Image (cartoon, rainbow, N blue to C red; front, top):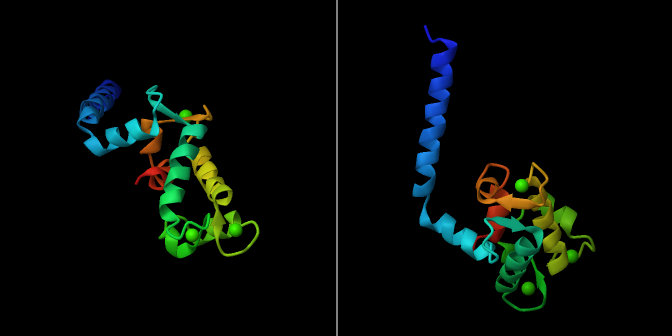
Length: 136
Ligand SMILES: [Ca+2]
Ligand SMILES: [Ca+2]
Ligand SMILES: [Ca+2]
């Protein structure tokens, strides 16, 4: 029978194991953080997220008309998000409309409301939708 103490020990060693795995994280995640976090403080603030997503927007906007359509978006945004973000209902997203999606996903990725998304938060379940908008 597992005693309370055994359970706690098991939890602690599981925690230690997780800690030990963390540095072996794929290099791409670290590279991502370096790109996303030019200030190097280990967290992404909204301004950094907007800057990266804005540059991403420019790359997606193949015909350079300042708008991206669903085809140019290539499934990065869900149809529901698209409908909400497309405030003027022209079937395209302007950069500001697109960044409203980024902002919503940023807030979802920051459940502790620090205004910053840590690496752990970014690659959590809640943070992955944001990561998808920021990754190349
Ligand atoms: Ca376009
Ligand atoms: Ca629009
Ligand atoms: Ca946070």
